[in-house]
Length: 111
Image 1 (cartoon, helix red, strand yellow):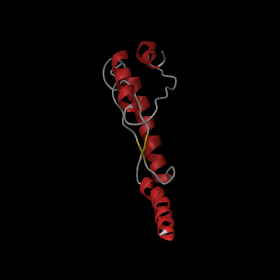
Image 2: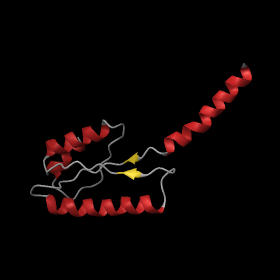
Image 3: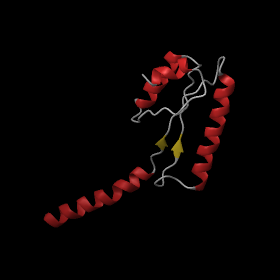
Image 4: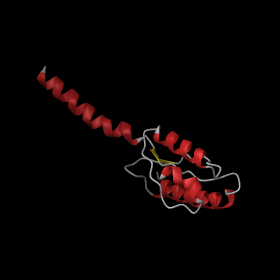
């Protein structure tokens, strides 16, 4: 009985990382893709997309692909905050990098 429990435990420990390896790593991007600030937002977005695609073709992080949801904040503070809350609700954290858009858009993310 004890040996069976030990074998079961070892099996679970060995299978766990394999099952998890298929799950993608989710990184989020919040930029204005429409509206008055669409041009700089789309420029940043295209660079991020290229970086993620390159990452996924070269090497994966812990054997896992990277996915990138990108809600559009439309250059509006309330939409930026809602997008951050949506991404955080997926089980991830939210970190803001310096933005090249007006502070009225990024301010809600840095209270």
